[in-house]
Length: 173
Image (cartoon, rainbow, N blue to C red; front, side, top):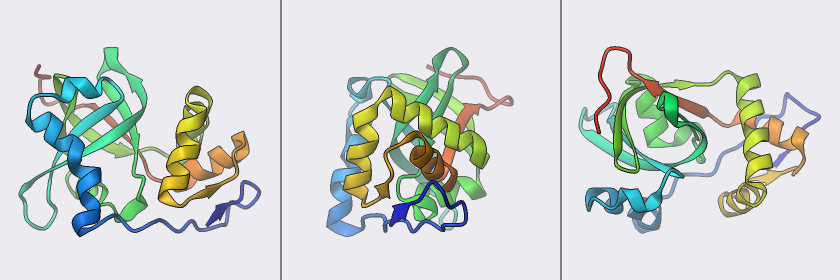
C-alpha cells in the first residue's frame, strides 16, 4: 500500500508477521542474546523480554532501535509488522518489560507514542539513516513516499513504542 502524505484519512495495511519457517530468520538475533553475544549487535538493536498475553509465559523479540537516549535508558522502536505483531499485542496488555541493549539490562515500561510525535521520530530516523527505511520498507512491502511528508505520514500510522526505565524497579547490568 502506498502511504500518501496528503491524506491523513488513509488507513495503512500492514504485512502479516512471518510464521513457521519464515520466522526463523527474524528470530535468529534472539539466539545471539541467549548465547551472551548480544553485545555484537551493538546499540542498534535491543532484546525485548515480555510476557505472553494469553499464556503468561516469557517471550522475546529483537527490535531495531530507531532513536536512543542511552544516558536516560530510553529507547524507541517500531512495530514493523504493525499492530498484529505478537510482541506489540503483548506489551499493550502488560507494558512492564525488560530490555537489553548490548550487555545492559533495563526494567522498563513500554508506551506507544502519540501520532504527531511518532511522525517526528520517523522523519528524524529517515534523515539519520536514509537507506535503512527505504530498504526495510521494500523488504516488508510498504510503499512509502520517500520525502519528509511521506515519512511523517508513515510514522503517524505505524506503532512507535518508547521503552523508559520503570520507576518502580532498579536498572540491572
